Length: 469
Image (cartoon, rainbow, N blue to C red; front, top):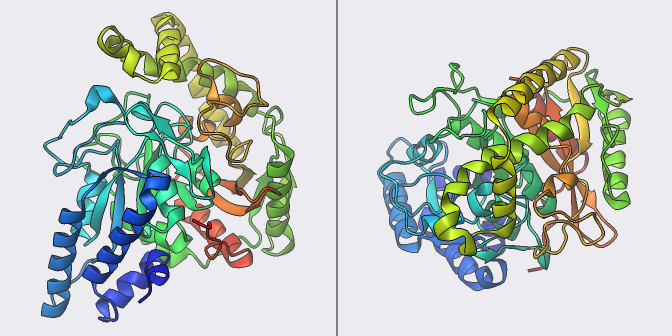
């Protein structure tokens, strides 16, 4: 097979081709490593590439195929792992000089499950420092460039995962999302990303963000995301917050569609600023649900939405204030925005935090009650398309020492309430930059979000749109 065929082959097809002996895992991995070696200097998606380990794993996978061994659902399929996830055989450095060279003794459960299913890990992908921001740069790795245009933001904190998916560095990428960090890079890079229901996929170590960090798939097709979600889902003793339900078979429900489903569309949640090019693409996508897919679409302003910004701007710095302890030794080598955010958060008193937490849980209850009347909510995934990765906010937006949340108002509500939410490629700006449509479902209805995403994918296919690298 050619490099282009392997680079952009969906995992569902790749796994079938490996089983049928039409392509070998060694050929796949060797081809991808050669592609990465050629393109990585201009993208910078990896903080740690493991060619030796990947080739050795691919050789073992090939031998298993030839012996006729039982094969897992991801057998021989390459995967990348975000550098916030523990890996016993590779460093986990959190995009920070303060963690350079850290090697955990165990894997995050999702890593173990992917490997047990036969996946071959290529390496660790870049993150913003401790995942604090939506901009694809860190003191440890510098800028991760958007494959659609060098120098522009690829999104974060799952920066390298989004860039790798768009650049054809394999079909499967593990990401995480504490305030949009799967959905932002998916939006900026023109790929698919799903933040599952909170607790669907175990997360270890459990985050300190009051149950907001979700682990999920980033891929170029919805079916690939469903496949990876099947593998990663299910309870784990290492994460006391995981759902005590067996992993589903999400791939079997992708044909369900959205005909007759009650779909709300909110272009701005009643308060968010949205760049016109993004708003136009998202509005056209929402019309597809009504005109082509048979959904009952209503334009709404959710009554709970206006409470979100104040809560987000208290909790985000408050949770990051734990990094203040690093400043005496490391401040000059840390992201200045993270330093400013942590310092602001340290001023929050415990009384203020607890009172805000009461308001947060009322806000979460209001969201879940509202979803009793709607099956899905459509919004922009972010307010802007990719901008200069050296900036925290687009140049024409109000500037702030740390508040990148101003262009991500659509994302963090669903980290607080734990609902499943996806970013689906829905078009391009006149400048040729990708735009994502966010699809949010009721808590536990991951299958419904995936089915809606798959229906839109069938109506407006995107996987063949590739950046000119």
